[in-house]
Image 1 (spheres, rainbow, N blue to C red):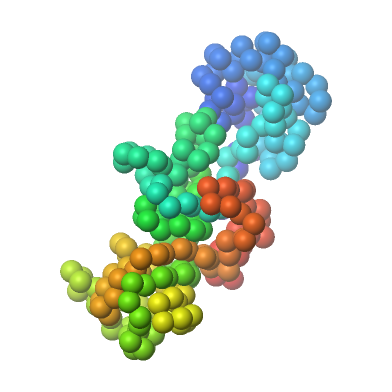
Image 2: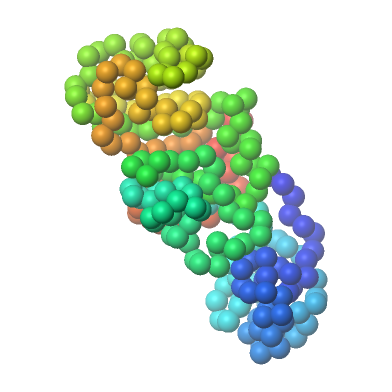
Length: 246
């Protein structure tokens, strides 16, 4: 992960976190709305060490400070929302506090899930971490639960594992993928690439149609059962380490 700044001016920190322009933040400080270690902050120009424990030590208008830069989130993406900032309709960014949409550095999704796919989605403001996870060189595995329109014929697992399966419109075969059959119309599929609508197109290549798709894990990080659709939580160091290969 990229290193956090050692120190940052208070007004710059709060502005970067979306609390308002620097003049508005300075007024918040003058109004006594910012505390640190239980004491009202009087100087908006003071420099602060940007450490992970800062939200537990600082309040803004009576609420804990938002997480500082270096933020990575796990979201249980519900159906019907899009991983975009520009498309029409509900967006994943609308599931977070409004000021998070103007944070600097900005939160970005690590890869995408299409509108009709649910499950584990990661977001981060750490560009280095984002590129490490999505880099084809790292082959980070992603496991999906798949529901199909028609019963499988029995040759799907071998086709996916062959390393020769071609997707329509492409001229490079897929890397080997693994499939575990759960029932005639359900399976788990683990891929190490991130091609456009890959799992849906894999089943189209073996003459079936995906009608339900849910991402269960990325690397060794699994979506917990107690994280409801539309809910999210901040990842700690151990969970971040579980994403990338050892």
